[in-house]
Image: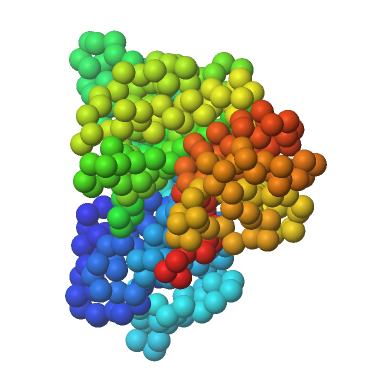
Length: 427
Ligand SMILES: Cc1cc2nc3c(=O)[nH]c(=O)nc-3n(C[C@H](O)[C@H](O)[C@H](O)COP(=O)(O)OP(=O)(O)OC[C@H]3O[C@@H](n4cnc5c(N)ncnc54)[C@H](O)[C@@H]3O)c2cc1C
């Protein structure tokens, strides 16, 4: 599925053979977009992905799980952690089943969305240098190893502006910039391409999903001492109609304090946040720069403090040793392993009744009662505080430390960013 003709061929197939079940193989950008489009045409859609999460090249698992929930809620049959091993057809040559390692799925139509590979055949035949990523090697002027031959678009390697590594960036946004630079340079100019940040955005049903720079799961991230924040918040003032939640995961380097990357997921406006970060990261900005960016504020457009400000301040507080966060994955593991710790929910009782994490370690003690009831908490057991978005949880961590507790941290992102099961009033 790389050309309009390919999309038209799928539409023609739907019109002529009226399939009822489609299987999309691969839960990357194109697989997910295709699944939504096929469902909109009335098909029941399964998505099969070999890895354990959707959008694996884009998101860390706790962010991907929000997308997975959205897909399942919208009726997509999601099969993670299984590969397609064969397709079975009928006597007329039509596909009827897609067989995975774990299941047999009804399939009248199968779309393989297994990633993009640069088409470098012509360059190879011309004897041009192909880089280790499989893309054509070019310098900052977009010249190949033969300086009279320029190359751009999906077929070339790019420099990653955070890591300095050579990467493939098969995006229309990148290809267009390459084209302009090549046009300038072949007509006597000397324009240069500074590289990419891997900026990506996709709509998944009602969710907006975006990423810039490095993810925690990126192998290149191991070159840094990562500090992360999971910051949920409204996309504009919560009291102004239409406010929607988004969650930002921000990554920074402990040594340089530079922002290394971010992911944003939610029903609210995420593109603005990612684009602000693109600008900041292109200038080598730090979390300190981000925390005080003079972003536009009026209730229809934002809160007085943007989610990005909050995320930057969480990281600054972590860097200074004030805030001690723990990831949802780690807390979930402790719950599953039956570890001896207290998951202290400091929200109000009505909030708890609406939704809470179901675990024997979980205990409700609203923040406004914490000081007076602090003696009811165990002194020598690890306490993980949590709330709705982490702000009260952080306050609780500080109150407990002030009361002499030494083993306290807060759940990063708290219940809004919690990617695992919760008990809801409606469930
Ligand atoms: C389904 C889909 C959705 C996408 N959505 C987005 C998006 O939302 N945002 C985004 O930024 N990017 C998106 N992309 C990626 C974007 O389309 C590509 O990055 C962009 O088209 C790359 O431009 P290009 O000129 O390098 O290659 P192409 O657009 O592929 O054009 C290359 C052309 O060269 C022709 N060609 C190849 N070999 C030869 C030859 N030997 N001689 C002559 N012609 C040749 C090909 O037939 C083709 O027409 C999407 C891609 C797909 C497939």
